[in-house]
Image (cartoon, rainbow, N blue to C red; front, side, top):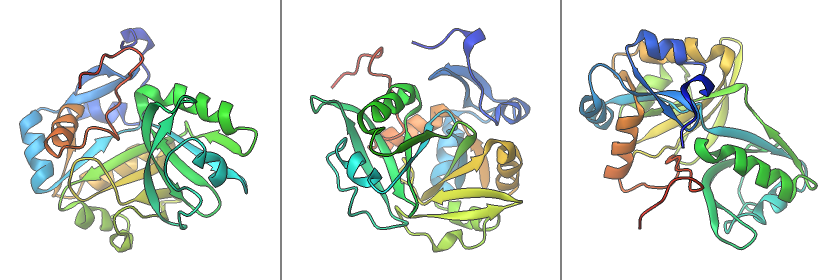
Length: 253
């Protein structure tokens, strides 16, 4: 169930969305852009042919820190966390104590921590679950001051390397830190549209300026939630990034 309008949170790009003419809707407790003036289908086709920039700052970001962090996190998911090499990213399923699926997520071994991204509609429950289950074995640190952007499409790498030189050296499911105008960013080469793409964690204080720099590239256009969902469904990717709150939303097989 969406929060009432007066209770909706906003992302660091809210003013930019309004400036660009986005139609805003309640989504996962946030006011989010569902589409821009060009329309959903134009945004969908542009992402397939070129590069689209998505605001996914409603999603949850957190760090797991400590010598036992990987072993502890592995107790919550049926995937190998301990063996994940530094700079590598992996997809995982967060489980309940009964072994049923709570959510899906992505995580990266950054060397000095595990960087985890969970879905927006589930992030409060996910983080509480992680804290309760393994908070005694490692430090669980949410990152509410970070925005998250996704640049997706076959020309994403060409557009992003104009802003972050060297990002083209990343391969699929790897990540690395970058510096941009005095801000520390972390970039992974991943996504959920079936295209090449990147997710960029950027301080909220720099998010709008960074987004404007990416949008200045002629191949990039802003993309809303409507096209994000259609792109994912067309690609057959129905998990990571879907933001379905299974506590309130019935899911049909």
